[in-house]
Amino acid sequence: MKLIRTFVIGGLLFLISAFVPTMASAIPTANVLYLETDLGNGIWQYSYTVYNNLDSEFGLFDILFEFDPSVVLAESSSPNGWTENFENLGEGFAAFQSSFAGLPPGGYDIAPGDSLGEFVLQFTQQLVSSLAFTAAFWDYDSDAFASSYHDTTTPVPEPATLLLMMSGLAGIGVIGRKRIT
Image (tube, rainbow, N blue to C red):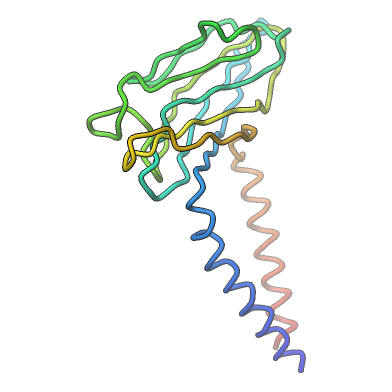
């Protein structure tokens, strides 16, 4: 009886994991990971990598970061083909736009399923950690604005953290295997 219940639960989890990604892929989503570096003298640098999580025709062409207006943005840089567009945004915002619309190789938008790094922001006298961001998508089939997606940046996982998590999962697997046999 216990073995049958385990197979039923395992089968349900497999079905859920098999169909969830296909249902979610129709909605444009993005993920932004950052690496935080202390440059000394109270300057903190954040290097961002932006991921377009889609597998369809939506290109990511604009990314906007929002932070506490009291934080001083000292410097910024963008990857090749992207420009910093901070005009008329006010304090507490930093935006980057693709300088030539379209998917690679003709344009610089982030293609579906692809990523782009080298979005860099430097702040003085304060850590900012996770920031709210908005990613804007363009639908190339209809040649129109498709959607925007709002979320929060997340830190790049540290190798030690990943190693600890993997060893814990391996331990759980060994214990589970011993219980089954």
